[in-house]
Length: 357
Image 1 (cartoon, rainbow, N blue to C red):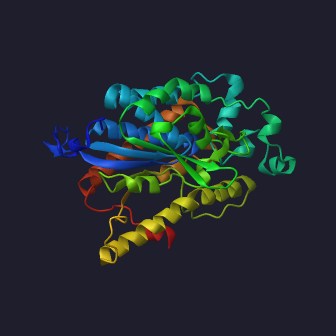
Image 2: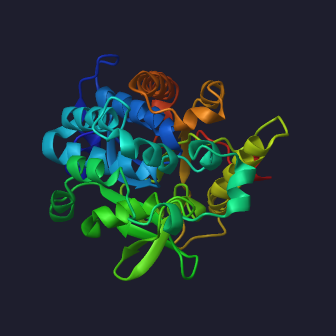
Image 3: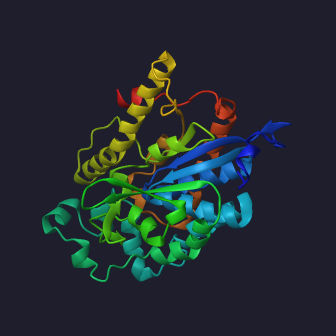
């Protein structure tokens, strides 16, 4: 997964499992989801270690956007091993054992997840909704404890000025509710922070005088920017938020969490529907123009294991928990590569229709 020319997608390489194989080019779609973003860190680490994939582009939102930007910085500076070290260092610094001050910890814990706002603030959801405090009330200095960590680990100038895989970061316009995609060539710290700016926790982040909120409302993550890349039609979604749940929530916190899950998954389901529809038309020979193509969707997830930690775990920011999620992510990525590497470039491995029908 090195920064090499696209022609390297067919270059023979040695692999510890197979005698000889060829690099396969893929796009990555990284969800946001609070502390569970450490699962995505594990996935990325295993894919980098595997060495059989070439990234053409990454689309990410919130924690997924940060994982993507840290990965790109590491790749640009030091190749796959540099990316693995960069991701590890980033997650260490955002943990309780890291460099965020104790006074900023509570704010950081809140920012990292949209599902436990009330609990993170030391109140119940019902109390929070009755009081109707806004970040303009309880955070008058507009402090974002993660900004310093982001700026110390991501070299925005380097990303803007060097060639490499494309990076798409999603944010939601406050004024018109539309999705805004920021690209690698323009990326700034403000743009990345906008992607994670939950409106009940932080003031809107201004980019060129335009206010933005968390990108998850309109794309978690956004897939359509990946449709325009040229080398591959394969998208691997790293999913950390459940689309379906069997149980019906019956308390305020669980109800709020499920409402947020549905809200943040809605744009993704709409894109799944569009991908599946276009794929059927292409298969039937109805679409012949070059503007439409069949996207091959894949997914790496471990929903049963992530759910076992409980909803409050999205606020848990200790290093031991991050490394546990990291291990689950690595195992999930290894299983995916073992089962589906040969499918990449040939067929989709994620059946989309049951997810929205």
